[in-house]
Each structure stands twice: as C-alpha cells, then as structure tokens.
Image (cartoon, rainbow, N blue to C red; front, side, top):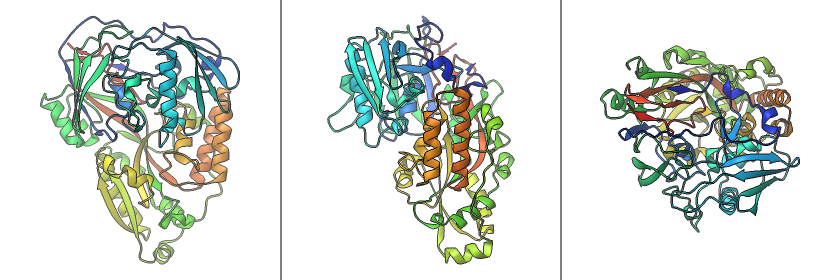
Length: 505
C-alpha cells in the first residue's frame, strides 16, 4: 500500500504554492507496463447524479482515476502538476497555466479552449460545486496551450482549488444543453468509464492513450454496496478486491493483511438546523451541545477507531491543535425542564444515513443523551442519496454527519465557506451569522501560511460559538484490500484510491 503522510494535509504549503512556476517531475504519474486481472472494487455511497463532477459523486472520478483537473495534490497537500504542466501568478487575481499534451478518452485533444469550456460549465452549474462557493472564476484561452484564470478577489490557494475533483476537465462531449454532465468516455485519466448501470455498477477499461503511461490493471469493475457489513463480507468472501470504509465493528474480523487503518481528516458532528425548527432557539442549541458527549462514541460505536473531537479539525490536521482559539460568548444552555417547556411537545427530527454503518449507532446514543436533556426525539435513517435534498432544504432539526473537512481543495477555508457561510452551497446548518462570515472572509484573504492557519482557527471558534455544529469524533478510516492487490492509495483525504500502479499480483 501507499499511504500519504500523517502530517500532510495539514500543511497548506502556501509558500511554495505561491512562489512561481512549477515544472513536471515530482509526483507525475508513473509509466507502468504490467497487465494483471481486472480490479473489483466495492464503494459505499451510490451515485447521486450519474457521477456528475458537480455532485458528491465527484470523488468517485478521482478515486478511480477517470478524470483529472489542472492540478492535483501531492502527499504533503501541496499543488502539483496534472493537466497543467506549470503555472505562474501574474498578479493578485491572475494566474497563467501551461497545458501538457494530453488526449481525452473520446479521442479529442486537450486544448486551452476545452479547459475554458469545462471551467465555464462548472461556474454556471446550479447549484455551484462547493469548491466555487467562495470564489468567482473567469477562464480565457490565450493560445492552444495556455489558459489565464482570473478571480474577482485575490485567491491565494487557486492551484489547490483547481485540484478539486469537482473541477475535473472533461471533453466538450460531456456537457449537455440541459446542464447534465456525463463523464462516460470524456475524461483524461488512465481508466475510462465505459458503462454506468444506474446506482449499482460501473465498468471502467484501461485508457491506453493516457499521457502518464499505461495502467497496470486492464480495467475496474465497480459495485456500490451501501451496507458496510455486506462490503466487508464481499471482501472476506473473495467477491471484491478492494472494499472502502469498512465498519469498525467489522474491522477486527478482517485478516491483518487486508485491514488498513488510515489517519483521516473526517470529523463526525451533530449539525443543528439554525434556519428553521427547534434549533432556531439558541438556548435549545446550547442545551443540545451540553447534552451531547462524543467521547462516549469512541469505544462503544467506533471500536477505538476514532478520537474524541477537539473541534472541527482533528489529529490528521496537526497544525490545528496548537492554534486552536478558545470558544467564548456562547448562549447559556436551557435546563431539561426548560427544554420540555420551550419545545412544547414538539419532536426533534434527528437524521442520519446508512452509508457509514457507525452513524445510525451514533444517532441512537445521541438520541438517549438528548432525551435525558428534555428533548423528544424521532430518528429518520435512510441512504444518503435519498435524503440529501431534504437536508439542504432544512427539513430536519439535526443531522449526525460525517464530513471530510479537507476534501474539496485541501484548504480548510473552502470547507468552512461551503458549510457555514450565509451563502454556502452546503450549509446544512442553515447558518447565517455575520461574525462567522467575516471570520471566514478574513481567512480566505490571508496569503501567509501561518497567518491563514491562525485565521482558520478563529473562524472555527466563531462557528462553534453559534452551536450550529457539535463536533463528536475524529475518525480513523479502515480500508479493506485483498492480499493479492498492490498499489492501492491509502489517502486521508479520501479522494484517491486507484491509479496507474494499482494491480493484482
């Protein structure tokens, strides 16, 4: 296995990122020439929008090496060349990217105009991809191989942002007139998506025209298995070669050679809906925060594969602990008697989803804690794809939620902007708080690495002050890989899994 370093993510490494041009070399794809059997992969979350990069499906395209962006992230969380072989910053708001010679899987050439077309579609998508929630981006083709990108305001981490799976560059064929986007046969990666069968299966074949060399595996057969126990059983029974997100209850049942623990930037939290329902009342939010004890979940639910939450960012973001800001100014918590009076018999609608096996168990523990605090609680537990629309529409009072905090760009500001600003595109909490918006804007504008980290932690404190989110635990991911597989990427960011070097022995 190849594992990105534990210290990684954290290091935004803005200083080298902003220093100037980058040349190909470090981190460029390998040139494997072997050809083992097809890889069988069991993924957890079925497609929401037919693998559109503008949905939560985007990470599937990067995990399976179907599509690429202008940049990618190396093991230290620094931007490295992908479809752009180099870049430079021309001013506070202008960057120039030089493209490498590459071909789309439909046979067309990668050109500057193709990049402009892809980024224009991403910017026009409704809703916008989370990675664009706090930036306005304009792309212009200077010549066939050069693209200039301009942002409305300074964006110090633009190269990191462009590594997001949501900003994958697809061929013109991918984009329909109705706004639909299809990655079938339109990416640039070493594996071509040739067939998508609803929400259950996908077929990928090796793309021999890949600029980074021939993949060692001839193809990938994907099955989506939402039930975690079933994924683990498929691995144990020899029905799959790679099974992601093994439930902690199943982890110790796997052979040591097939169980791989990965430090994760994933934080599980209780999200409280501040926009409608019970938790528009700050006193009730404070009562819920006071009632909930995430440390009780570490052993009972996660079997020790988690750490008690210290905030929004856990041990896999090592700079966070030393820069954490005390949370002050919180509203006083209502007593159990006051909760019963203030809720007036109304039921707290507590949601979670089945795709991560631990979450329904955690919801049951939290329900008991909340009921002890005076709330009347009813759970709604379904598959994530069945409830995302309702979550974003604010139809629940609370959500037990698992979030990869550095998924979209590798920069924490993007996560904070999409999830907690007034106009954030993934603001499930419905939070509209001027102090929070101001703190996140300040972090977004900071170019210095240390200064940016400090302002991120001030923004974290401002968010926690509102009690819109109650961090519970920081997870450790468990990935299942059969003993006969080599080259699987164990990525704390959960955006990489298979590349040109992944193959059966």
